[in-house]
Length: 116
Image (cartoon, one colour):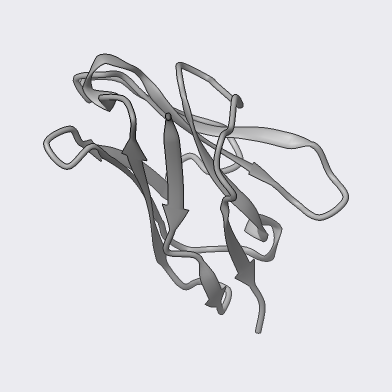
């Protein structure tokens, strides 16, 4: 069974940082591009960032460019999202997904709340 388990969310003040993790099981992420997506309260699912299978190529939504960094550790079968200079508009449930520019989520997500 393919599973993606997100973790690392929490409550953080504006300007703060968080690191999200996505642990995969049931498949090997090294063969796939991977993505992060998010869903803010009352809004649809939004693509955030993608990384190629070798980590050579990364891409970001304009709203997070320069603040978020996507990375992966294929040996640990884990995807990461480092989030710096967080803003209130980053408040959302964050999900990982297999694929390039993908929003094909499988897991429960991890909640990120940015508030003072």
